[in-house]
Image (cartoon, rainbow, N blue to C red; front, side, top):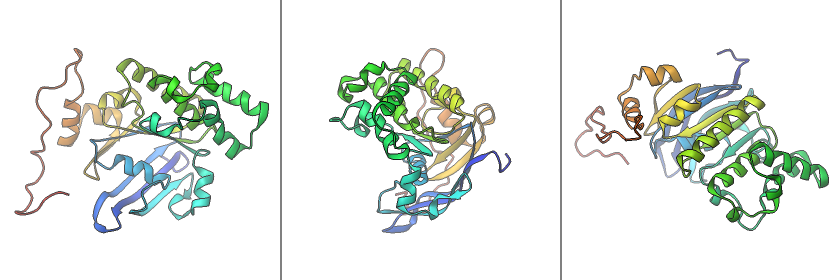
Length: 284
């Protein structure tokens, strides 16, 4: 990948608690994402994938600290102050969170919430704002007349579509999606994945997609990063990782993908490939 194609570069990112600086929650993570491509970070809960994503936008808890560089369009985000980051969040980098009901304000209409980044970043008001909000709702497959609806009046799939509309409102170059289909049924999940892939192609965005499901990875990824306990254990093109997994943990995750009959594997995931820890040691 040439430097001209690189949209995002994470260089030796480490995340740790300030109270325990030697205990790495994310350890020496490096990856690149090209313009117009999708990189999936895959792993179980606690693997560090969401911490990696939140580090990009500097949205980590104040109790955590980071080291390393995060370079977006040639600019080192890790060196920017909060005011500068506010100009990037929502405008140049959009983010879709896992659970829309905790991300959407229940007392504000969806039209108001979609319009907020347009007012903040693009200074849209009045009829121009209404027109853009209506277009965004239509773009994600929601009737623009629902602009005056509240989040609890929508289905789970519709709420996630609203989150997508908010995240792409300012036409960002990078979209971060943190397990956006986890709470959805299989049919709605497929619709949302198709929508995200279509929007990525139409807008020529780069997309960083966080998931624990290799079935999702197979549908949307160009490149794959597999994380386990804060470390990258494997990365490569989706064809390489799916067809020729090199690490036992990657193979274990692949074994969890439902077969054609919709049945999960019968054997539980094991970690017998891990080295035996010294006596008295434990993994926090």
